[in-house]
Amino acid sequence: GATTAGGRGLLLGNPHYPWQGGRRFWQVQQTIPGELDVMGASLLGSPDVQIGHTARFAWSHTVSTGVPMNLHQLTLDPADPTVYLVDGARERMTRRTVAVAVRGGPPVTRTQWWTRYGPVVTSLGPALPLPWTATTAYALNDPNAGNLRMSDTSLGLARARDTAGALAALDRTQGLPWVNTIAADSAGHSLYTQAQVLPGITDELAQRCSTPLGRATYPASGLAVLDGARGDCAPGTGSGAVQPGIFGPAHMPVLKDAPYAENSNGSAWLSNADRPLTGYERIFGTAAAEAGLRTRGAIEDVSAMARRGRLTVADLQRQQFADRVPAGDLAAA
Image 1 (cartoon, rainbow, N blue to C red):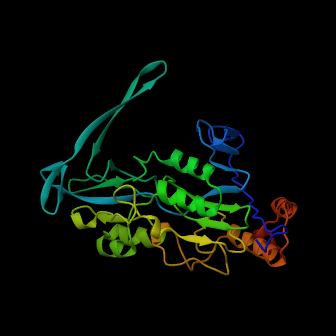
Image 2: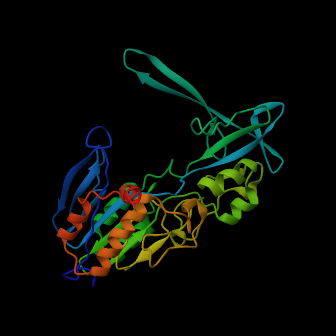
Image 3: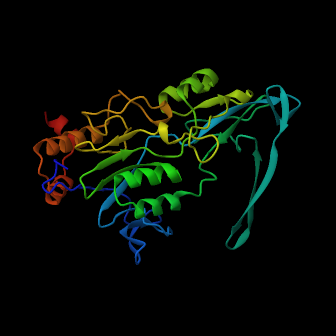
């Protein structure tokens, strides 16, 4: 509150999504007299206000650094590559045929093979081939595959009266698959949190259960590759989690009532440079690591503004459109 001219919170959201195509935002107002009065923006096809404000509260999202999936390396029965072993017991994969209708032509069909962990995959893009051999295969665990709670979360945020209510809604609904939340309210409170649905993989679990591939990918990127032949290597379920195999609210990085909070698609660590967040698991992102230029430039600008104080909407607008490029500053030095 002391950072702003009127003691009320200020929020600048800059989602920098496309102006065209399926990822374009559209402006929306939703009103149910006595129940709901919210304005903001939504992705095409969504019935919810996904970033927006009410008379007392405003919020926005940024894409987070959390890795919302993991792999399980399967040990196969040499006599049958569709059978894998867990704690020495044989488990047979389930075959599923998927047909997709094609305009002007016959349907396209594909066969999927499913395990207790999820479907078998043979790559995560060209940079990470995952060959299915006579002895080894890889299954993808995606806890958001069955997560239909994002609308519950959006509605909870739209009905929140302050940042405390917003955090309570995030903790209760646990519906955000891939974003951070930054918010402010009319009483001068601020909030940053990386409340998202992630596999319940602690650093201890990764240390104990990573395969040789996982020992390379987890420290480097947060992608865990766990030993699928061991039942004790499945992701855990955190306290208060609303579905099995994910973290509960207590594991989420949270910053409350800092003079400023910012996120430029970096990790939670430097949401406020004077109050760095630490102690979260690697799957959430890095900590105490070199920040990107966008994060560094934003911290320089926003922290200087916060120290100056008595900020207004016009100050945030000037910062947004100043067109400062930190890489250019470094090149010119």
